Length: 327
Image (cartoon, rainbow, N blue to C red; front, side, top):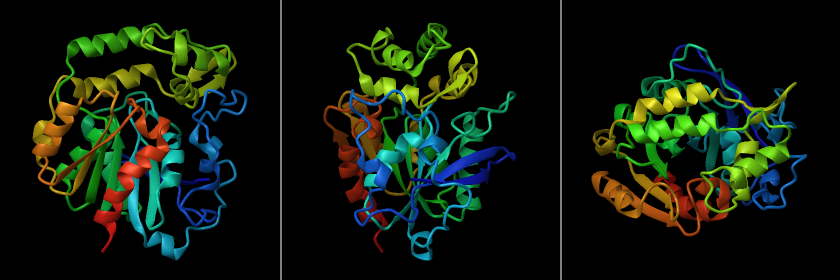
């Protein structure tokens, strides 16, 4: 269960944030819906959510206000990766222990947030949006938890605006440059999508097994992409514009980001999946570069570590959060 908050980005863009800290959260901090496993091959196609608001259907604009005790709790803001949305954090967020006010943001071009045809989709725009949301919701100093592109946004904001960020969690994002070949591969990948998809079962099948990028069948990957599809008269399409995703990615793949990482002064946890995109050597070098860095890895997890292994992710992250957020 989540509560939608309509917020404004840096240039007036309309963004959607989702507050997982609502009445109805059980004593152990787990939201009721998060206690139902959704990461197994038996996931129901018919009931597969397609947007964060589908998960939060019962939490309408008239949902009960967040209690004062929760408003005063240490805030945590979750930033999804490229093509993701806030709802991908739901199971993991529900497993965090009490004491945190946990929110997630649909970044520009993603989820239920605005997708301006002309952008911009620059690094500066994403970072400025996060700063505007933190200030607009009165979250500072906040703990930022970012996955992939969201992690880069989080550490760039922490470097530029240390007054806004108390602590940082980086989930499976590299600091090294990926290069032009990587961007060309992504362009080819998008062109190969058989979209529109006739139904959600086809989405699951393509992204979970038929996609040439899938080395072994991966039902969780299919479920991940099914959550960012929406139905139109001719079939199922992504809620995002693939061209905007490529533009967003173009702004970071050609450069390394070690300098901005070294400027992060707050406590920072670098988390990687053992089979993810961030290698162990690079992750440990990131920890070394960070003035106050720590390291954790999740066995058997890949790039979507918080989505496919929410329990293990929470076990890795919770001790760090408890340490940095406890007075």
